[in-house]
Amino acid sequence: MSREKACPFFFGRVFFRSLQSIIEGKKQGIVISLRQKGIILKAGIAFIDSHVHLDLLYEAEPSCLSKLRRAGCLPVSWAFGHGIQSTGDLETYLHSQAGALEKINREVLPCFFLSGIHPRNIPADLRPEDVERLLLPFLDHPLCLGIGEIGLENADAHEKEIFSAQLALAPEMAQRGKVFGVHTPKGDKIRVSNEILEILKGFTSFRDRIIVDHCTIETIDEVLRSEFWAGMTLSPAKSSVEDLQDVARRHVKYLDRIMLNTDSGDTFYDDLLKLVQGNNSETERKGDLTRGNACRFFGIPSPPG
Ligand SMILES: [Zn+2]
Image 1: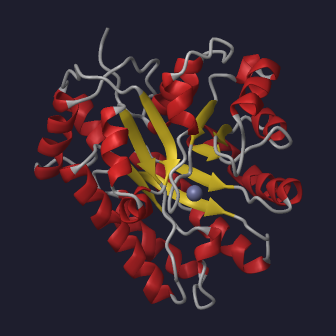
Image 2 (image 1 turned 45 degrees about the vertical axis):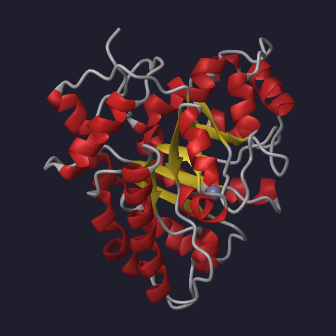
């Protein structure tokens, strides 16, 4: 699927109704359907939160979702469940995640999601051969843009097997125009990020479909030089706006491959919202970083003109 060049301001009732009619309708895949139908999206997206856990946020702080809608946020929700002890629990969570996103999209806020097995959600009884059966059904869901949150936390052998089994679905993903969202951990960041990049070397032909997320000042260089997309999470727990400005100054030639997110879940972080609404002329190419790049990466359609 070709990627769009730009994603001007559009959001609101027209986009919401378009999503609704397609979900209730017959076509597979909103992005394809919107393009095939030639629907002109007149309303605006102020920004895209390219990695959030909307199902968790809806449970923890439901009022935040209306706030995000009013602010013109289009969220992409990544999979992470609580209390997953067995493969059965994981399967139940993935179905409940899709159900929660359908409900949120229908009742509160237009949104998309990634389905996947987070490295901290890998139960001891999960085998690599179970992965395809668990994830493939979601790839045809009209709100699903791909597989995530996947990656490594400690980089043990089981994590690597499950991460690799998910990446092995890359040809299926490319056929469907979908992407991968890859987590890097907070602890032992540089070592585990390097292990992740080592595994991703086997998938460089799919690099346009892979975002390596939670990059920091210390790790983003390697990700960008490997020509993957890079995500930065703005929150007190991860990176600050000053970190972003530093990265933007040092990586001017890669500013079309970086996107931003909050990773909000049980806690809501408003750092991205403040960046979007604030007047920080110091942040280079703010519109691309907060909206345009994510539109191109996820294949979210932009309106003509
Ligand atoms: Zn996350």
